[in-house]
Length: 411
Image (cartoon, rainbow, N blue to C red; front, side, top):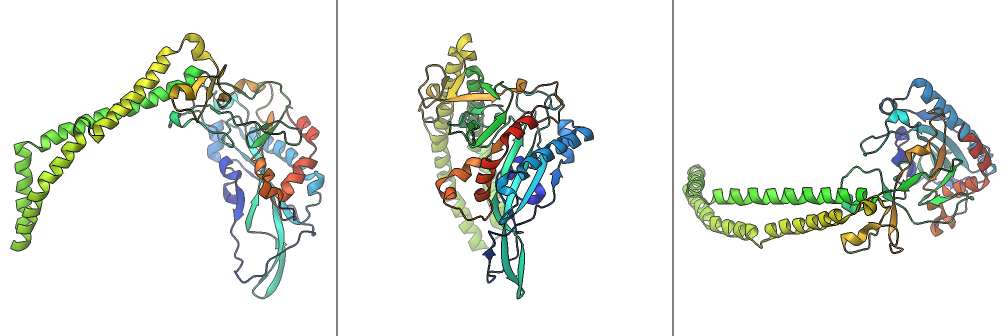
């Protein structure tokens, strides 16, 4: 992640990377037993994001203060007190909010959301211009640990059915369950800390799940049908005596600008190519040809989805839906969750009623620790030398005062 773009939520989940000008010949040595510094706090609330959320300066300042309170809890964790073998850094940001998806409340109706990001940069020693330098690492990569606050629109560790195409839907496929992390429930690649017993996500109705498939397939069929009709009409016009005569007149004009032999060769080549082009185009546009077949395929796909939507009863339309990406038929990929096979994962949508409207917009009401499961892979667990990243993130999570985090929420 480019440090200058920390406010970008998706980028912040990746490894932090800041270029360094260490020469290939430099002797790099890690200093895992030395105490490193805490870098200064920084906070990003871009003007466009503040405007998008309708956030007042006072609300943004209050939200930053709450993130700094969480940062203080992080810094008190025994695993990072003091920062041994690394330079610690914590920064905050306000997340953007999109109202493109149907059913979303206005930005002012939901609390501010954002993130607190922790990064452990390894301490290093190296030579530069013949001099030995000791400093906290200004370049390289490290896995960040991100605390995402008041965010229900999650994109990490979840997916959406490919049949939805570009439809703006506030829904996703429930990720497979995983073992709790530090005693907290896990959801895909993240784990969650909250006090409110209300669910963060609700079932997505089957009717709402298949309607965008129908809309996408109808649009695809109509586009292919109309384009095919246009191509057929243009080819018919291309074959008229008037168009043929106009093309030959153009060839004659071009040939007249060439040397005599070259012009004659050009005319001969065009006369030879014309029937070849015509035959190829006729085969392409013929009934049963490739273009007409694509129209029929799009029509079959459209009718399949149209039949499924038409067959929905009032009960099945509102029933919780699930999605099975491995199923062959559309009716088996989207179906009611009740009675569905195990491989059919629930479709969920944000529960915007989770948030308590009586609390200030700056109040944190839920925090998700994002992408932490990458620190639990076999390859990551094999790394034990304190060099920053997951080697520090794991003991930090284990040693944090999570009761203090719960007390920090909902006030």
